Length: 281
View 1 (tube, rainbow, N blue to C red):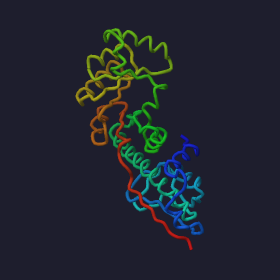
View 2 (tube, rainbow, N blue to C red):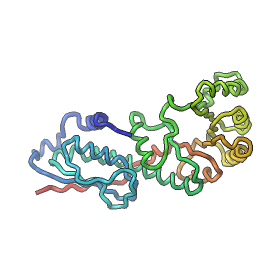
View 3 (cartoon, helix red, strand yellow):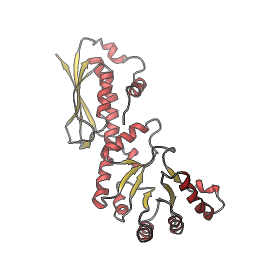
View 4 (cartoon, rainbow, N blue to C red):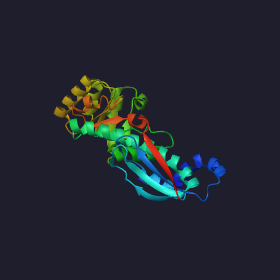
């Protein structure tokens, strides 16, 4: 996934619409400096390439960086740049904030991914389309660096029927009878239906849905659905969604589900990163 220079320039312009008034007052154009961004905690590196691009777009030179998807230990340096004192100050906070959000998302994602794989190697970690407004590409890149996959990138590439979609029909039975039509209309797509009632799930399985997404289901419900599905409809996939996070994910994945759908990874805070600036004499 590519975050283009044009997109990064828009990000830069939000923070630097004209010039840095503080360093302008210092009259420091002839002063050279170097800057390191380091971590105060163990993290997974993420979007370091984009941070480097920001530095270069602001006329700084990148001397060192660690690529994305690497395990970084506390006190290790992620990026080292140099340039004029004023350009360093234009670049570093933009770089630091980008890295703090991205590395935290990637790190939390990786922790959750490892918990899932330890209990259920065939279960996948999936993230919803509930990313921050105007930041979808950044959020998706961050979770990919942590080991997850996007559940839905948007409305155009997946079919997922929620309760609200079924309001169009006079009864559950009318909806069930349309499933075959949906599958014929989109033969290369999977038909996914969200439900939280065992009776409804049994009917959906009978009518041939490809994936059942259980929303806010109890552990007992999920266990019963998986057991029933494995006997009667072994090729159907089971996802769980709604309130699943790093603290309770293991309880669900050990029941034999195929995927965990979560939004929690977008709301995990920021990595603890620091900076060191030195004047080059």
